[in-house]
Length: 278
Image (tube, rainbow, N blue to C red):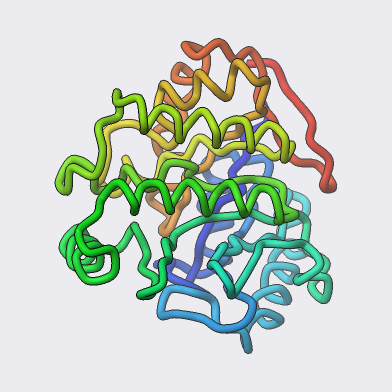
C-alpha cells in the first residue's frame, strides 16, 4: 500500500519538530507521501497558527525540503485552514500565491453573539468558555460546531475535512452530549450529507488518541458508518505534532475502516483523488 499522511505540523505553527526532522522520520517509517498542513487563518493568527507574515517562508521551506528529498519521498505542501464565522472560509484561491498541493478545511471554533472559542483548548478552558460565551448551554455549543462544519462544507473549497467530530475531544470530562441521543445522531446525519455533497475526503484522524484525549479516532464508529453509506472517501491522518506520532495507530486504523465496510482508501496525487485497495 501507498503510505500517506496529509496532516502534519511543524515548528512553523504548534509542532515540536522542524519540517526536515519530520521528513527524515517519515522516510525511516517508509512513508511514500507526507503532506505538511500548518494551521492557518488568512487574516490573522493565534499562538498556534502560522503567522500570516510567515506563510511564504513556510511554503518555501517545504518546497526546499521536497526537492532535497525528492528521490526518497513525495513531499506535498498544504495548509490546515480554519473556518471562523465572519473571518475565514477555507478556500484554495486564498493560497494561490503559494502553489499548494492540497488544502485541509477545519473547524476548531464555535461562535455566537458573545464571541468565539476553540473547542479543543484544555477541558478547563472549554468549560469556562461555555459558561461565559454560551451561558452554559452545551447543546447550543454542539449544534454550533456542526453547523459551522456544514457552512464550511457548503461555502469552502478544500480537499480534506479535518477531525469532523472534534467536539468529542473533551466529552468524557465535560459531558457535552450523549453520543446515542437522537439529537446528536441527527447532527452527524446532516453533516455526513454535507460532506458527501461537498465531495471531500474525510481523514481518519488518530491525533486525539496519540495525545491521550480519546480512545477512538475522529470520526466515531457511528459517524464513519454514515460516511461509508454515502461512499465518502477516507484517508489516514496522524495530525502529527512531533516525529513520535507520524504513523500512530495506523495499523489499528486499517482494521477500523475495514470493520465499517471500506475496501479502499483515498490518496491525493497532483490534486486528484485516487484510490488503493486495502
